[in-house]
Length: 70
Image 1: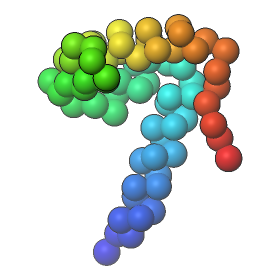
Image 2: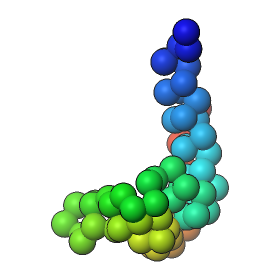
Image 3: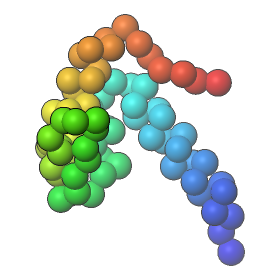
Image 4: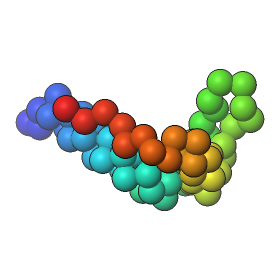
C-alpha cells in the first residue's frame, strides 16, 4: 500500500518547484485540461492555456520573488 502522506508531500514538492521556477506552463501542467481556477474576484481561468496566462501575470507582478523554500 502506498503511503498517502508521502504521495501528497511529493506532489506538493513538485508543485512548489514548478511555481518557484516562474514557468507558467510548468504550473499549468498540474491542472486538468478543461478545469478552471478562480482567484479572488477575477474571472475564472479556464483550461491549462487560461491558467498559463493567469499564472504568467502573477509571475510578472512578482518577478523578483522566488518563493519560500525550506
